[in-house]
Amino acid sequence: MGTFRDGDFFYDYDCAEMLCCIQPLGVPWHKEKGDDHFLFVTTFIGLCWDIPAKLVSLPEEKRLKFREHVRHFLDDFQCCPCHLLDVEKIHGSLCHVTFVYMDRRSRLPSLSNFVSSFHNNEVISRHPPHSMMTDLTWWFQKLNVAGISRALCP
Image (cartoon, rainbow, N blue to C red; front, side):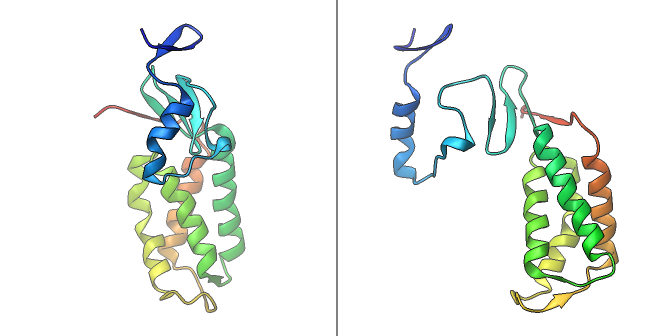
């Protein structure tokens, strides 16, 4: 039985001791990105972790936020050119989401290819290709569905 108690559970270390151990790794630990004590169901790095059920999901608020990002991109750039930063933002959001929506990764290459077509030029604007807009429409439809989770099993 561990020295540190959290409700009905005992641990060999507490949160402060754990943070001290990982400090040499240089991993930033933000108070608002996790909990100040151990929980079996918790939101960390923008994902909901259910350890007993071995599931990870996108919190509802986050799912709606990402869905709105996709909707805004589709609305804003259906007929207009966009800048590199616009594409990088939506691409980064969807990369984060694919940790839960793993089967959706096949819908990211069109965004990656479009990002690379800018050659790091943040000034120019380009019209998004039809393939990318089709993939974003598909993402929007998938993000309309609540309650998607991923099993944390090998």
